[in-house]
Image 1 (tube, helix red, strand yellow):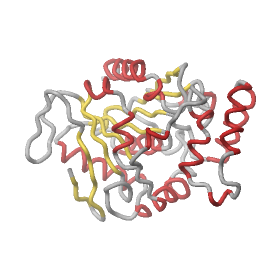
Image 2 (cartoon, rainbow, N blue to C red):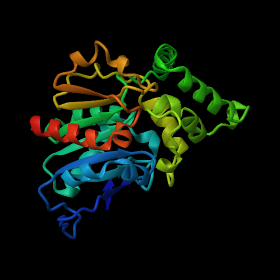
Image 3 (cartoon, one colour):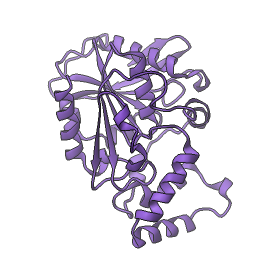
Image 4 (cartoon, one colour):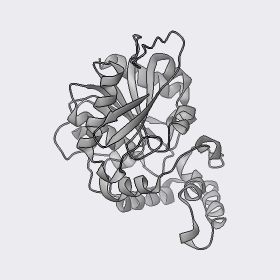
Length: 289
């Protein structure tokens, strides 16, 4: 499905499911709650990684943000207000009165900010591995300190081994190589092979540079006014990229927020504990209707 918005054409993919009935205009005709999954690597990696149990209960709609994946438009034009308008246009095209928003990692910050601007149109926010702020230097420092304090010797050796295999010149290292080398910091299993999760990913460097260099560095969950929408924050016990400890003293200041730490997960609890993750999210959504 393609949705025309000022300055861009957005691409959204509706997950197929038994019992689903779509009208010719693309509007969803079923009783499952609609959940927009924010994507910045194309939709395929997100389709592959989200649990089937979640898709059975929610109508998952994967949305390429403007300037990424199959969506057009200049990434440089994306700010939180434009993002909110874009996602609301997708909601309108689907014919849904309200939608939930799902964001992984820093995209959780985008989901939170869109919900802050659309309290009447967004029912829930699910943020997985999302930091409480966008200061990556501060987050990296806290993650490294937590890793040194908390990680086992085996996990530290695995990280050192992976980093030693990277190109010697840092300028020759791709974002994908760096992310896979950091597996011991991002997954419960330090030897997990995550390459298949990202097969077919579409990394737009201009979008990534704007997201990390312009849009989110100054973001803070406590700034910008109260969040009226219920927030489910899923963090992994073995996530050293976004340590669960980074939310200490902060979550209590976010109205209607709930935190669950997944004890056998890193940065992607929906991959490492899919059944428990799905159960937790769906039960929370039922409680916070």
